[in-house]
Image (tube, rainbow, N blue to C red; front, side):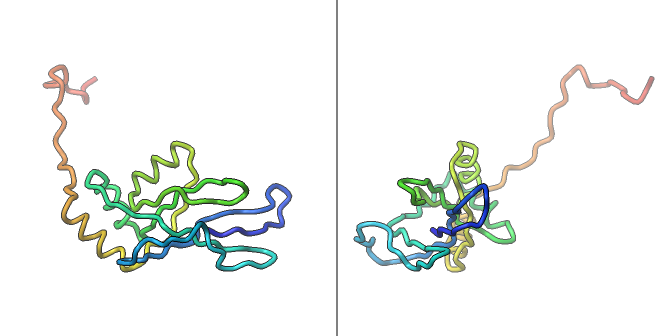
Length: 150
């Protein structure tokens, strides 16, 4: 998460998610909390370790939509607590991120790391089947009706 001081009469600071990093195969860190990575008079960057990313079969369509975009994202949901932005969850599902935003949560998209894309694409190939379009049945009242006649 990154904090930036703003020279704006309406807002003095801004928080945003700026990236994610994986620790594939490593045990979860035992750090007590966020780690300060960088700080100067105008900005600070914090690492919040220990978040797991789980894929769910019923979110396969949302993963497909994310992968179909020009730039796939990791969506970071976060809240401001005690003056600091703290991530609450991560998702790769476009649909889940949209639901979180609809619920009023703060969600930032950060570029998905390249190694994650192949794993997500394999998951989507295994679990996502697009719905087939079906012709809509016309109600009996429309059958035989000629709309182009006056």
